[in-house]
Length: 94
Image (cartoon, rainbow, N blue to C red; front, side, top):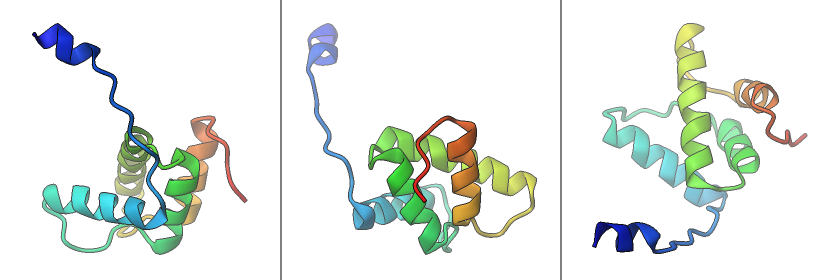
């Protein structure tokens, strides 16, 4: 039965800009953070680089939070997200 479930194809449509922002905010809140961490321009870049794919949004957010922590940042901005896109070979939007 589990194999049957694993074999089911589920198609998730890409998230738009507002959905990406809501998705990131919800994930942060579920982790216990109730303040804005990602600036609006960072959300724009996250959505652009990830193509709205939740798995890619998660990956970029994880990398951004780690990088931000290592740099003692209180917020994540577009510049940091763009740099991650360049480092991870994702297409960078200008």
